Image 1 (cartoon, rainbow, N blue to C red):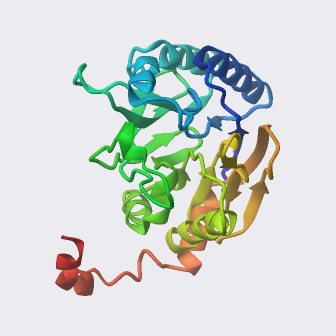
Image 2 (image 1 turned 180 degrees about the horizontal axis):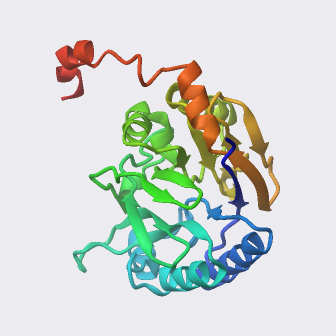
Length: 278
């Protein structure tokens, strides 16, 4: 039996003005609901673009609480009013007020307006000439996937895509959809890496990848949805906006049945090599 769900994916060019970015986000939520989407996913840095010239202190000044800050509170209200699940991202203030770095946080809000998951990006992009750790703090936990009206959703963020461990953990824990809000920086081979990695994470785990991306500024766009067999069912290219598509959650189980990669794992062998992860 098909379990079709309509989902929306947003490709934004966030400005440095978080008030304007919130206004745009709320408009997208209303539009997604009008088009009967049950889930809308926003990219990383939805709250604001942080340029290289912006100091860590300046970024800290715009960060908010992930539970009662204005940005999230307004999105929760919109989710409840529009009856839509939302994957949003914010700069989250540290629990220590004196810290001048922030968390890069993804939040899953259900269609009743409640926060059901908060994931702080584990892998910071200290690579290829960038050093996110100058402004950001790394999270230290992977959040359990959460059941929603659109399927079971696991959260990861951007650079996490390059580390197969996190997507495998979420898949084993029951994720049918991996939402990976991203701000993928332009560069040599970067788009090729983006597409290849998203396909690999989908294929090896037999699930949907939903990867909304920033576009413009220094980012590459190409927001994508990949099905559990690795087929690209959405590629937004370099245009700003929102796309709404239907996904069939029953395809997750049918693909995993015909290509049983999770079932065929050899944990008895892997356990002998746990020292490789220390």
